[in-house]
Amino acid sequence: MRILGAVLAGGESRRFGSDKAEALLDGKRLIDHAAASIAPFCETVVIAGRTGGVPDRPAPGLGPLGGLCGALAYGAEQGFEAVLTTACDVPELPEALMRVLIAAPPAVIESLPVVGVWPTSLGVRLAAYLESGAPRAMRAWCETAGAQMVAWPQAIRNINRLEDMAQPARLPGAGRGP
Image: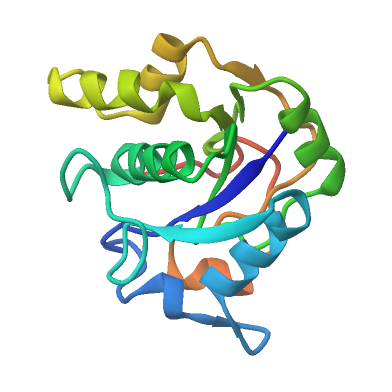
């Protein structure tokens, strides 16, 4: 199966206070960490939702779903069968988890549904979903698309605030807040 990797990076970084994709973690930009975490499982990796990258579809400003929709459309146009997504604020992912997701698309991490594998054939359906005014929440789309929600017992680092840069990974669901 030909897999395109896509780092979803179109957010506004409100909780972080500055462009978190550009923030340095161990001397390397967060967006580069994210791309490196999925690169071994993809033919190529693109950035979605940022200037110079794959544009959001069907319009800008639709959050992670706009980036996913853009990546699915781009992937289909380029002959990919699936898109493996992560977010620019997820610097590392376990290899075993990636293999579980890839084995059964559509599939996402239950605690972090921006990380997942999506058949490119869902692109047209997602565009229609977004244009319909349906909720722009990843979980709502996952349910609509019939994505398998993979529970992962190990901690996955997700950097939402500046102070998260110094924190270790937390177990899924731990410390959730606004």
